Image (cartoon, rainbow, N blue to C red):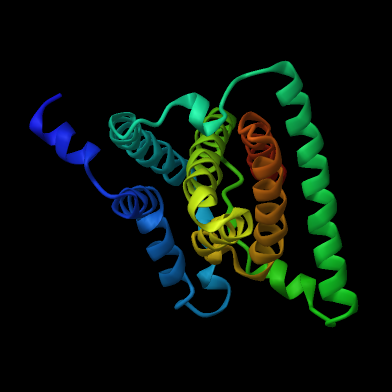
Length: 228
């Protein structure tokens, strides 16, 4: 082991956590918060082919560095609970269906109990270029779904549960997930919070990451394809 790897291996757990979360989500969180400063419908970004390609490149680079960093720190796929299985794939489809149910329920509660204007909220949601390439839509859905769940669920919850407890780990995961989705506006919040709680709890109970990835990939794929 060279001196750099030895230094990385000796880092305290808290520094490791800061490096991983900042590297994986620091720029998306900053960009998402900055998007809140633009008033009106102009605050809603447009998903274009160029932006999808940039997302793929960004997340692949991030994934490469974090894979190297965490391998030195002793993290393995088994520690993440990541293993492909057909049963896990089926569980991911079920998880997707439950996600839609929770989101619809959250929107119903907001509309009926709090008299929330869903149409106005939808108008502020991100816009999608109708000329999106379906190849890019598929690729970004796969890369983004795997990347996000690996770190926002797999890493954060695994890292914090032993030291802070299951619900603290889940709540931190939900907060981080919400922060980099703030650009989506109220509709995004009503999607991300129920989804984050569901995925965090499911992962904490089963320690299986593959179903979360399957559900997230399908959620992105369906969302972008239907929004065209």
